[in-house]
Image 1 (cartoon, helix red, strand yellow):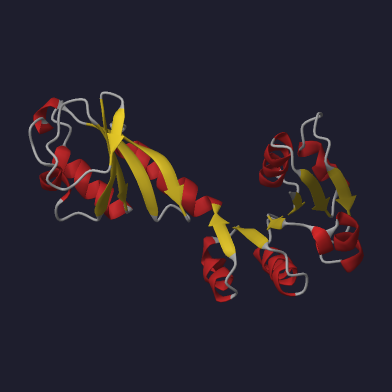
Image 2: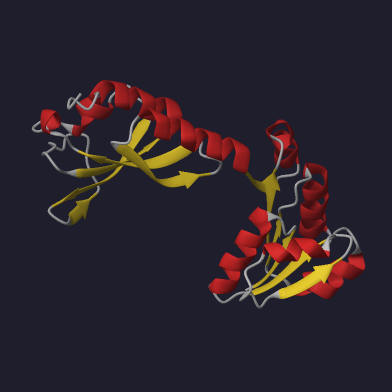
Amino acid sequence: MKIIVVGCGRMGAELAYRLYQRGHDVAVIDVNSAAFNHLPADFQGRFYEGDTLSYDVLHRAGIEHCDALAAVTNSDALNLVIAHTAKVAFRVRNVVARNYDPNCRELYEVFNIQVISATGWAAQRLEEMIYHSEIRTVFSAGNGEVEVYELKVPADLDGKPLQSLLEGTETVPVSLTRAGKSVLPSPELILQVNDIVHISATLDGITALRQRVVFNAD
């Protein structure tokens, strides 16, 4: 894929390098040439210094033929304009943006731009880690509003139906693994100690589940 990353701060540099490592053709744009120092020495993508809103700079970076663009500067106004321009004027197929200030997040939704709020997502992940480690996150959707968690069934849940564990919480069972074999679990499925259960849940849902299980080891 041909991908343009606009903004070469720490997040932009990390994203560009990860994409490069996966074999993509990556072009990085930043108004400050010193920002390119954030990239590892073995990064072999393309660099473009200049006004990120300049048609000439975007043209040289190949925006007319790129498959995706990520606007990840530390300015929400800039990210919004770049993302909207790429999507509407250049019809870039996949446009994503970084939300720097959580108070500005609704603006991205108005323009129907896929957005990640690093601040909000990180704060929620840290909050979860503070509570308990027995249920760990394995996948996060959006900005963490819904996540998939992994639970190893403790002894006190042995012989109980899955439904009794999840009933009344904002949770949905995703899979259950027993002796190395995974299935799509029904609510009536009887849990066994050391089963691995994957559960999709909101933060409120997983909080209620943690309170219910109390991880009876305590």
